[in-house]
Image (cartoon, rainbow, N blue to C red; front, side):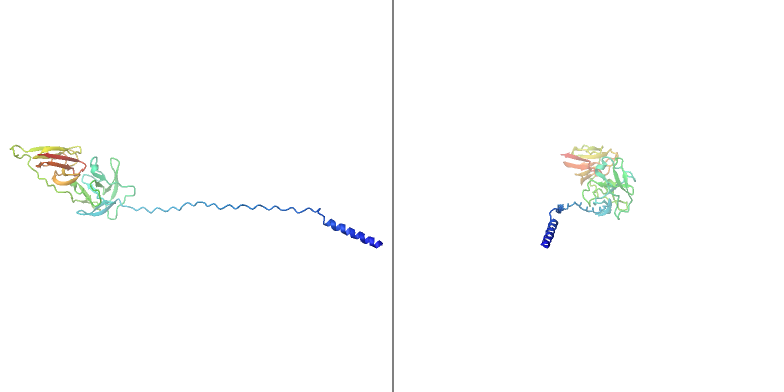
Length: 287
């Protein structure tokens, strides 16, 4: 009996121990917070500046070159093929073409680049500063000009004008060839009998201040032009600076007069100065 009681007591103690071991008094594990996922930002496209296309190397156009002209051979031109001229009254480094002269004879400027000549140009090219401040290219010291009537490459209407304007070769020498029309007017005596038995009519026309007169005369009148300007002039028949060869005074230096030119028939006769083509006048002949 006693043994049964002891066994019962031991069993009860074991039961209490097991229950204690399984008690909820042990604190529950604290859950570890899960970090929120980090938002992924879409990549930003950084603009890349476009690669600059290198500018093509500038093409060097010679300020002076040469070209072949009918009747003249190879002469100096600018890079566009326009004829260039020298003036007999100029001296090395000094231009005698000033004032109204520059309306017909335009200076060759050096441009903005380097002063270059083609391989065909062996003359010494330099630049002078004119009294008006403009810069002008020279060939072996002689200033170079355009003629205002040469409106297209290949024309040299100024060659030989007045016997003082000339084209020039690539070595800087003058081309003494004139392309000007030969005068065809026939001088008449200053005094000649008229149908009425009296003296022939005559009129003098004065060239001064770079101007040519416009005037009227009667048929049968002879006209004599006299130049009072320091620069040479002509009285050349033609409209719009295009000679028609009906009459020609020849080159008139200061204080020189032409031979008398007879106007025998009625009509309108425009004329101009072949050296300074902006100078124009008209002779009107009445019956």
